[in-house]
Length: 248
Image 1 (tube, rainbow, N blue to C red):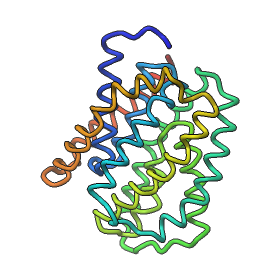
Image 2 (image 1 turned 135 degrees about the vertical axis):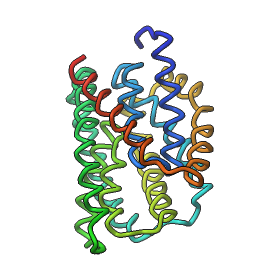
Image 3 (image 1 turned 45 degrees about the horizontal axis):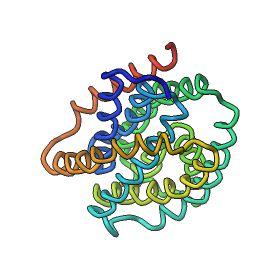
Image 4 (image 1 turned 45 degrees about the vertical axis):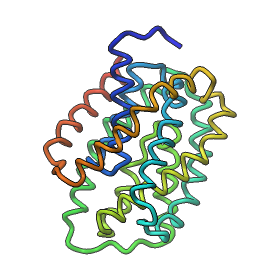
């Protein structure tokens, strides 16, 4: 691992808190900031390995708050495609060096802003979306690829779920369950590929206490605050961090 500055550790701790906040369902695309922020502190491959255990910790706490508040049909529609996407994503990781991964993460971050615009447009659409099975397979495939390479599939899943007009709790609960399953599926492959190592696990361990703090903050914010202006700031940060990773 590279030598870390004080700011690098601040970025890493902030990313761990944001994992918890995002897993609690507050702020929509806030989770998109996690990977590029961590990639400012660690090499891209190490970033993927460090974040996966933290995401699993966040999943566990979030499932506690949203237990059984999910739409099983959507989970079953998305999961098969996600499994195929994970396999494809692992092949891509094997072909990308650290610089290539960092640029991919940056590109996903910048592209995320466009996805958010499309998502907002779909949310405003008056008709409720009734997906077909193959729609779920395609969205699942895209989610599997992006979550494997950049831990950044939240916007893809949201793009599929939001037009269905699920209640807020069932939207968050469905998202939490999907990623809890996906992240546990990814873990043995990340170990096999050498993305999760003793070194990355050690960094995950000291960052882990920040995740439940973030979950608590997210649950509190969900019940009391509107995320509109907060998320506009986050979008600017996601875009700026993505550009930094692309040109650094």
